[in-house]
Length: 68
Image (cartoon, rainbow, N blue to C red; front, side, top):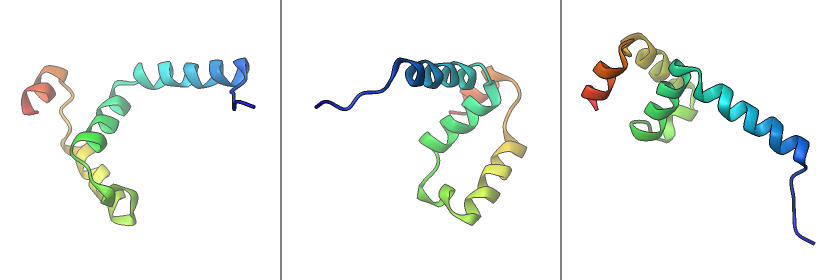
């Protein structure tokens, strides 16, 4: 028997993906965690790192891309 996901669950998850993609600050934060973060972002000190990133993040997307 193959494991499967119901159509309702798949639609629910897909809606959340689109919701996250349309929220630019969250996309930037997730990209930072993926590219610049390490396993420490999942510890208590990681919350401070994420807050520090949020304080220094550029509101201008072109400026943020040029930093990478």
